[in-house]
Image (cartoon, rainbow, N blue to C red; front, side):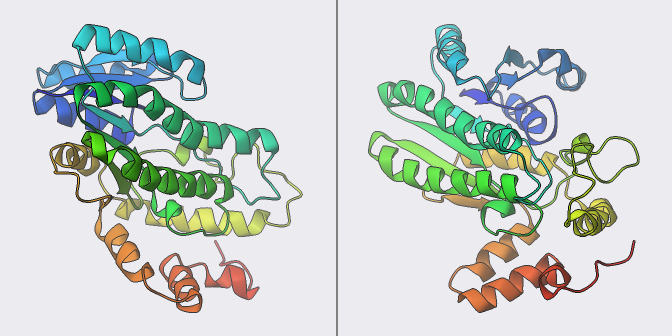
Length: 292
């Protein structure tokens, strides 16, 4: 079966993707920044009688990519599928985002995946094929308020995935983008510990503070309706087995709606659609933030 490398595998899409590929009989290398956090994945795999191999890979340290990928190829003989899943989210507007924070998000969400793919591509060319799956987001299709750094990084992934697809298809290498809505992955709560909605790093004097709080209140209220990340793990397997003719894969009905409606619209209709679907018209209209 195939040899799979998945980044950010300690939780969320990455963990469920690793388990889904293992169920499929594939050889799975589950990578993560902190291997001490691998217990959840390893315990889940053990309960099902599955085997996954854990490797340390920090997406903000591209100088380590060559050695890690080289070790995997030496052990397994190939890399058939790379799932670039690891990601970081930091809430905030441009004015409230420090340069260090912006660079960290871009390093994790864009430069890391792009540079990791660059290391893997020569192996895929030499073996005559492969599949690179880039996990994007609806934030990569639509820029909305309060999500500046994350949105910028995911827009970059969208462009990178589309360009790379055309660059490498002559060698039988396939590229896919996964568009996902809101899932119960814990990526937001990881930045807002305890009962606080705003993360510790958010400036107390920010003119956007009440707006951000209102947006986070809306996200928190919608958490019970969040999609199950296990479905994205299964989608990774489906994509890896596909013929490569499809670039953008929607993971849920909300993503499907956004993708279908946004393409072909003029900017006025696009803006209104985005404000309606994300319930943020009040932000642009200068209305008071919704009450908690």
